[in-house]
Length: 349
Image (cartoon, rainbow, N blue to C red; front, side, top):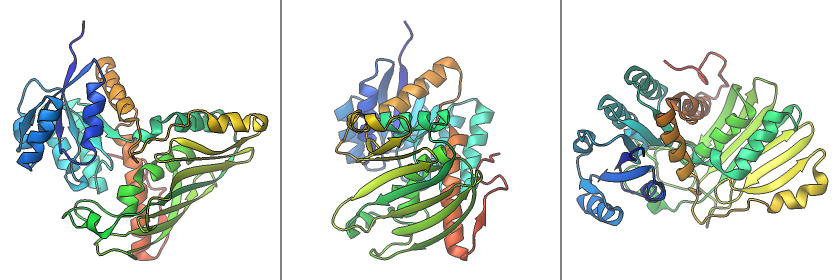
């Protein structure tokens, strides 16, 4: 019998339990060590999940018995920690976004290539059953030529959320687009394909923070379709909507719910008589915006390691949504459309 892979986790904050609980459910995985700069949090988390605690993640990386590192730290730390982990011989699962700049993302990809380590980015909503079904419909051509795509994130964060020294900062986080909307922007380009150009506005309207709490972008895709991104954290008093919609010549589909997990609209030529059935199937509605698919990401990573293949959400794949958000930021900063046909979207070192 194959020995379980041994995991170490860095960063014991809000999303870390999703990783730890997923690992606990998998017979082919074991969480053996965790690290957090706050000793009390590292101790508490380690006790809860039966792991060894550290306050210096480098000591965790030095352990020869750890195969995979899960990085759940602030976004601005992802690149340096992932690179250090891969150079220490570990495979890496890193939370979204993989990095806050394309040079950092490209460095992560390059080190993964150089070391032969697997690099997987947590884009868990791709694995949700409604999203998987939508992807199959798009790939099959049942929607016909795609005409329009929308990513909409109308969420709320109180001012206190941005007073923890990293949320909403340019160095560690970014704003409503890079943090809260990245999953929806990722889903939009995953479904619609390569963007050709982007125009955008961003603003900080309701919070005291460095980055934006509101962003609007218009995208022209290379196939001729158009797209709209709306992302914010200003919709008082609560999260109101997080959705992705695709409109084609022969169908219109919108996936919403708490975490891109609910069919809101499903109108496809030849299936209209089954619309009610389709809208009530797979209607998972988890209480958390993180959804329920972290486990699927980790299962895929284990398979990639065992089968010597790339993870499905590997570095090059995850770089695309980062590139699109950065193009939106550039368009908003300059007031000019940003051309994405020069390899910015799909290129990597």
